[in-house]
Amino acid sequence: MLRLPTDGPATGPLLDDLLAGDGAPAVVAAIARALPPLAARLAAGRLHGDPEAIVGTNDSGDSQKALDMAAHDHMIAVLRDAGVRQVLSEEALDVIVLNEDGTFDVAIDPIDGSGSIGIGAPLGMLFSILPADPQGFMRTGRAVVAAGYASFGHSVDFGWSTGDGVHIATWDAEADAFRVSRQNLRLKPQASTIAYNASNERHWAPGLQGWASDLRAGRDGPRGRDFNMRWLAAAVGELHRILLKGGAFLYPADARPGYGDGRLRLIYECVPIAFLIEQAGGQATDGHGPILDRMPRGLHEFTPLYFGASDEIYALHDAIKGSPRCP
Image (cartoon, rainbow, N blue to C red; front, top):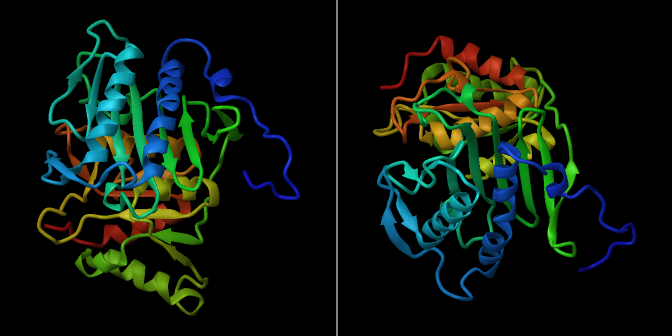
């Protein structure tokens, strides 16, 4: 590894030491330990074959790539060994029962942002952990006891919360372990960087279009200050950046066929994000109320999502109030 003049020995406690013990932390630790082989395959690109090869379709008709399904199978094996009762994955139509007597259920998106496989853009993983219950995954996000994400970029980062704040660990190849690099992250209430897909703006409800217009006007407009724009096309990448740098993200409903309820999955994408964002002092909503208060209507239900700095989420709510709901 290239050494910088300011470098010294790697610092930070080992993740396994912080997550020692039983219960939900043990499941979080098992997921973290499963990440290095997945990161290594991502880094290998096409050297061993095509990770983008289409091998099926998921519940919404999206193409499943070889890497999507390999990550799914890898995580199912890991969660089975961890004693998890059942799993809801984006890559499986139905709930997968692993251990009848398990004490936890896990909802997971094994590869987030798979449209960017093979081009070096950020990819990730999202998960949440719930106590085993006869209701299974048909519960609000308030039942979640732990959640986390993996970010595969120029570093491999793992963010998590067991209800005591949000912390991030980074993979230390020399130690063959994750080291905790940041603890108790807190979001500033005001955002200066906003993430959304501007190409869809013309399909938004009028109130949101007005909000975006005011945003772009910067210091010369009603907001009276300038904003930066970012769009990574991967929810995990946006989450990781916002936790580290602040800001806000939105993927609203819009008027296109199939987008009237947004396009992100409630249970295994939006709920983990919302749990982490609330733990960091921010807000995560569907434009009308907290994501964690939503009662799912189906295992793979879509929802609009707005998350990040609380002041900007409140401003978005004000804009939405005057807008008719998208058809």
